[in-house]
Length: 269
Length: 297
Image (cartoon, rainbow over all chains, first blue to last red; front, side, top):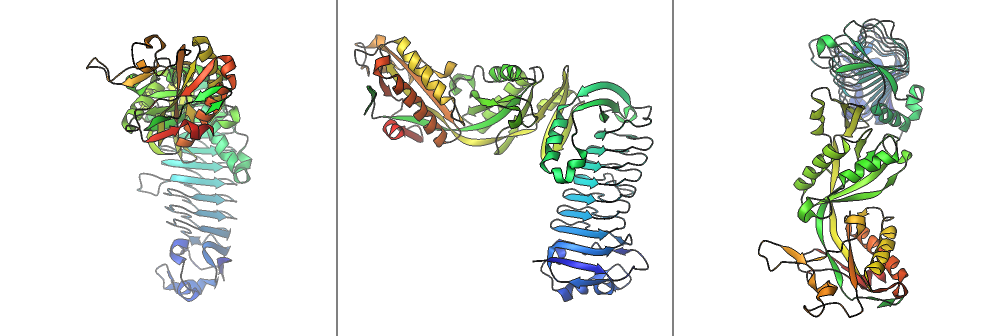
């Protein structure tokens, strides 16, 4: 069975919350029922924005996507969504399972609050990737996010669990206030990486230009858990190939000593 | 039934339901993995006095272990899940955590019991956990770096107490046959022979003339008591040795018994092996019966 496809007819004049359009909710619905689902509070319906072609709702495709489409895949538990083009804020917000793939760029707060599943962004991610929403105590709480391009500022802010892999650069305050979890950056990181990091790991391919003064050098080490991580990444080398080989030799900086000092910035050597 | 001059008794081994787990111990090299594994499986010959029965199952090459280092697979058996959990924690804590460069992982799926879950507190607050591939690992800072251990291991229902007896002309002949048997049985995955070198010379019967003892020497198979008790031994038998097998399932116990008996029979009467028998309690205590004739046919 082919995938359920929603093709954006024209660029909407304002942002539209697509959080109602998740595979869990659309599975089993007729085309007519899908077309009449309300989007946002301005009286819009799916048919006003999208051409709907029938198919398997657990394999959804959103075509001609734009950064005005927000909340794609919010709270989804199963299935897959492929976004062809860019998408707006809150991609995969609080998702609990399934897979989302975006061929273009994603807006801010992608993967915020997600607890399981996978998010793959072929382009760049906006600020607050996997971070906590304002007022939330925790950001990402599980699952895997892969960004093939760059990530904005405050990636993984207050992240609690899970794995974020950024193939490009990450902006300022990467891993700020992290509670736990792992974030891997292949490119450069901006200023103040790991600011107020409580626990968790920033794993960097390149040495940051500067570190916060509250991180202290622990020296060079071979850490065994990195061998497990590498082996896990090798299981899906098609997705993770650009992060391999990882190796397990790192320079370890413990911190943030102003916030407990149990976390770490590891720089691969 | 006679194989290569060795009489196979028409009897059965009686075995019991147990709880078991498999853990994988890795280290910088095989030598240190063995140091840790031998310590962890030391003093684990019988649940009667040791709390558990344990042994090294087999070696693991670097590509068979989670961390890509050489290691060994260890099986531990106990009479209850609670006791197994206690033994695993104590033995891993005292013998694996302490061994240089070691790491420990679960080697079996099953009901989770603690592996590193409580050992992490040795880290005094500096321990860190990582969830990788859906499994949680603990990184405990130690003086040579970090001790990495999986949070839990799996517990499964298993079979303990499979056995057979090798009756020979003398101790040297019995020992040679048992060594050959153990060499063959060690290749069977999922089974261990927990006694020293895999062989036990102090087979026991249930009960004793002393009220405080629940088991005592198996007088019917003691050659020096022939004439004094109702002996099971013919005049030409000078020594009896027993091999006890614990396995993850009945099949593994059966395969190990078959491999061992075949190897002992290969030594044959020419090598001084006279009979193969087995220990049981009349069939009333153990839920698993392994008939020797069924096993060797």
